Amino acid sequence: MVASASEDKTVRIWDAKTGKCERILEGHSDIVYSVVFSHDSTMVASASEDKTVRIWDAKTGKCEHVLKGHSRSVDSAAFSHDSTRVASASYDQTVRIWDAETGKCEHVLEGHGSWVNSVVFSHDSTRVASASRDRSVRIWDTETGKCERVLKGHGSWVNSVVFSHDSTRVASASKDKTVRIWDAKTGKCERILEGHSDIVYSVVFSHDSTMVASASEDKTVRIWDAKTGKCEHVLKGHSRPANLVVFSHDSSMVASASWDRTVRIWNTSMGECNDVLPSDSGTDVLSFTPDDGGIITSNGVSSFTDNCMSPENPPMPPPPSVVPALGLRDKIWVTSTGQDLLWLPAECRGGTAAVSAGTFAIGCRSGRVVVLGFSAAEIAKL
Image 1 (tube, one colour):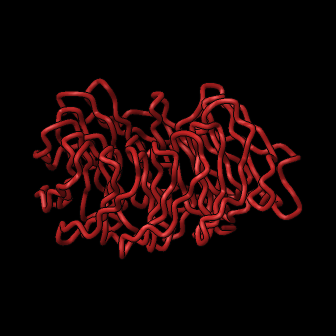
Image 2 (spheres, one colour; image 1 turned 120 degrees about the vertical axis):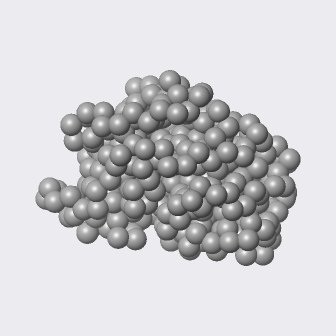
């Protein structure tokens, strides 16, 4: 199944194979900004301008709960990895944690002094991180609702926040032109990554958490050593701001998307541009395919040209057509049997993303829905 959110105040659930609309979920009284499936695919949560979050039965389309409490627009919602909780981020400067089964508000996370841009669960679902225009990141205990740490230091609003794969660190990207790496347990700022000359839109850890990549308004992407904070490479070539960045699964490549309507593929060891792929209308989605042989954007899947593949990065052999079961973790990773396959940049977490069986769908801010399918062989190669 695929779910989409719309300005027409509805959520629609579609059959991913036939494209047929299976359900129209009506009830919101204003624009629906985001929709997400639970990790077990039994529930759908939608966030709306009408100040509510709704939880729906994915099979019947019945609205199980209307989550009321926010006093302003709800921009995004996220399920915990175990699908027992929902977190919502709002312009009312709060994050709320809800019991997904009962619809009861368990905690109101208050403390931010401006609207909350993004919210994400840690992999073990014990913590939530929120990024706000008040220049801070906050880490919260999901059981108690207590704010464990307030990460202060940025000189302007924080655009995005992400946990490292092992959830021990947090990286934040800010309008103040810096990236900061924090100890998720102590809240201590371990590194300030300086070098960008304008707003930093996107930040991501490599899969082994040894590197950080950042994309900026200054038209560059930077690769940093996550331990020392040293800038290893400045990737130049885009003619307009770079808004998204993502690592390949083996961390040997970085892909960057830009408002110049291109996606560039870079070698992380040398910092060289190996390929330039067109993106007809720009993109708000960016990820490597499971075999690292292509790129997924809002425009679809693009294969690399021959000169992109080096001896140390050969393409994987074509997989058979057996379809595995997929999952979605914290609205950040598309997973299979607990293994991360595709990373969703921060810019997409408040958008539309859904999974069912071997199908993964992304609803883009442009209005398009990209539907992807994966086979067992593709996943086995990771």
